[in-house]
Length: 470
Image (cartoon, helix red, strand yellow):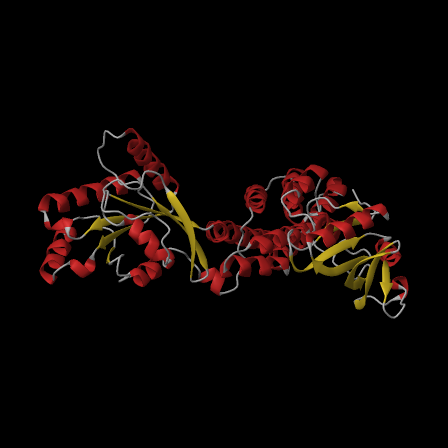
């Protein structure tokens, strides 16, 4: 799996810009860089100290391609653990391609997706969970996901797993030793201490597994469906939340025929708002398809905003229908948080508001109600604060380890299952050889997370999701 050849790739986004960075890593990286670089002070790159910068020109035969700044990093004190140079050139796409093509002719090959980070993992600079956190850090688009990725990249999650694995491994060694002296019926592993360790590991694993519910929504954003009858202001609310004219607003009922989605960061947490077609009986084929999609989006959403036009609720029949629809939605999705939003607050009299509240109060399972004016942006901040209350950010605020990776979550579930088997075996006085099998499987699952146990297929799947140049 370990490659000794030199790889090259553009480390900055493709396209024109002020500068671009071209990265080379491998045993001959510095020598290759030296072969195309002419220092303004006639320095030999191969003789320079690690972590130094050098100004000069990239030369292709007699042709000068660009004035550049070259950074030298000597292995093992580099990101990849190998000799590495980074060429900072001007951001012309022509210059980028000319330099890369020159380096390819000098003996480099184009890097695969994530190959620099893969080499960092193979050379022991990062464990596997830290390497995966690099990809999460690059893709983080809000404060919370950035904070979690940074914590994992610094080794918070892997350190916790490694500590549990080491303690379990020590007891596993004592259990294995007992098997070597099976005929003498001796116990090297203190069963009381072992039981205490298993309880502690079980507690930590359950906490990490539970954190995935928060970590997953922070990483991927929380889908929020805006639903209700036609022409109650759903598109206006979406525009108010995003503070831009994202959806078409019209007095004509049924304007929104398809779902419209956009994202917004509130308090460091990403929310994905989905404006849906109004729910009503209709003979319009296209609108019917839109309504069908509305129910699909409700099913996918984690929070539902049920919007109603406050002025329409002055008709008792409309108010009764609202209660029926709210209860119907709650019965269909009992575990899904629902917020009732009464729109056009600015046009409601105090008496009308009291009538609506009195009617809603008669509903035994009435969810929380918020009054807003989407058009005038009244109450929108209150709605945002209420949405934040659905996210348990306590662990995030306390800088606790939060699991965001599905692969890690799967391994943690399997490890917990094996630990509970060991615990049951210990409480049932099961023989050491049978317990040893379950302990080995638990250790295997811990190793799968940090990369102490791995295979080419797993690494290929993980690093294929990286960008080229990282």
